[in-house]
Image (cartoon, rainbow, N blue to C red; front, side, top):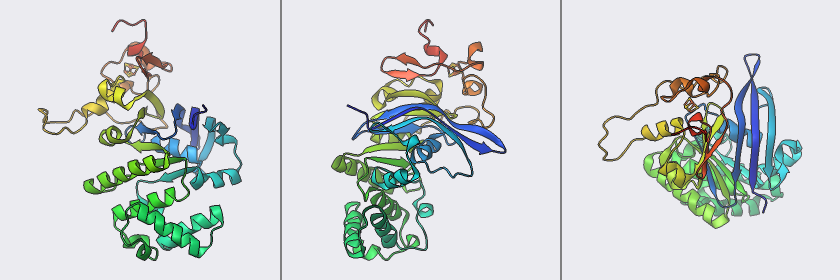
Length: 325
Ligand code: SF4
């Protein structure tokens, strides 16, 4: 059976200060129907750029080039026409963002913005569209949904706005929902509600979720599979269970060590030393080498291949088969 989404060697370059700079470097992953794949890593590692490349939402003025393959049920989206892409956004692939307040238009009501989606994609006129929108708002647990149609975004709380964004993203029952840090801007209690909501809607509609997060707690709750990204590259692929059982890459191990723990003996988090490098000035060889406690001479030069270890794959010389661990 053809995978729902198969991304192969995706490479995106942006025009930065007169140079073409890679912001996604040969990312490869697969997303199956009804499953959740999490892209994990610190800010600036290329997670959101991967998502924006899939949606082809990077503004033309800054986009340098996109290479590789994005196969959606076998169709390469990178070769699709602008018109085809416009139709697919919303109906096949939909995206929710970290800050719903900045993503919704402040001068149109929630009702207008959601009805427009139905009008553009399905040609549905006002009365029927309003009925569908009220149902969608009800589905995501917004109280008095009819009354919310005439609300402007600033009249809703953060949690309510994120629910409205989710309702809008799911209006056309997309096959894939891309959720970019969907709970980061929300209070902890609202975060839990939104994650619950996404899980139950996924169950109901059978959609796949590409979840972008830096929060390992969210990964544990939501993800079936994980790709850890560092400095534009996917550096570890594993099932969520395998990753939590035994993180392999020193960067992934660092992310786990930096997690807050409840009631543990540790008093301090173990931060990963140093910073994520600037994308236009990446270290040679393994991009993680300046921060890695296991750095070897060969880590500094040349690309690091991917090694298979049990059911995971990891780009790190520590897992070279000939090496004695
Ligand atoms: Fe560390 Fe080398 Fe592995 Fe990179 S390849 S993570 S520098 S051991």
